Length: 317
Ligand SMILES: Nc1ncnc2c1ncn2[C@@H]1O[C@H](COP(=O)(O)OP(=O)(O)O)[C@@H](O)[C@H]1O
Ligand SMILES: [Mg+2]
Image (cartoon, rainbow, N blue to C red; front, side, top):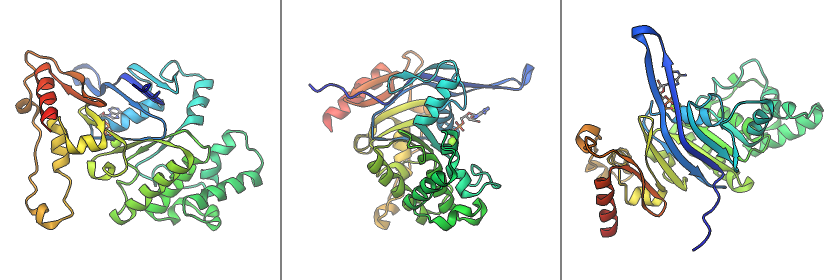
């Protein structure tokens, strides 16, 4: 048997709880509720689930925009979930960059593209302006923009171009991992593929590892190596993409898959959309669910009897 590959990002029992209001109006949201997964070097891991299930919070907690309520995160073997200090802040910004959903909200309207993309270099002590300019222009070319764009402002660009600027800003310091939080959800369908192709090319060229967040499976289907499906703060299934599409085990994964439109109008007409109803689909009154490995590298959040049923269904498949 071959040695299991070392993961680059290891997330273990991660929790993020938000408390808002007080007294009788106090509300507690378990945005991320005991989530564990690994992302391996040079792979794309898709994190998928409907709006509000905790995807953004997972990404933001990993990169320490929030302090975790519980659990542990390591990157290349080093813990990144412990007490924050200058050294850890630098380690994080050297290694992990985030690309946001809304490129207009995440780009400072008063900064030029040169300033926005060059900021990471400045923070890393590249004080020479012409040296920064050379690197900024190189990165702009790399993402499909030109030197003339450097002196312009974010509002002068289309949505797709802004997302390219966001990617250039993230990539300029050559991070080892990118957390892309729904980077194409705000873009026209025709532009989505271009941005995804760009991320894929950068990944291949630079050996980049990507955590790609999306709210539906159609976007991540073709380029994720592995996929984690999230429902109300919990990961319910994690598998290699092919296994997830061919043998989805969790009823919520099946519901998400049934929502993907078929390109063929004949099959599309007969497509049956499934819904997921936890109260109907599970009986957890006597058996508690937990994450179990149902087949090699295929994990399912399930009870003991669901586990046995899933194993039998995979044997038949
Ligand atoms: N800063 C916050 N304060 C309070 N609640 C939050 C905060 N951020 C997110 N939430 C809540 O946490 C849950 C998960 O949100 P989010 O991570 O944004 O989901 P997703 O990205 O999957 O749409 C939601 O119920 C959301 O309202
Ligand atoms: Mg989100």
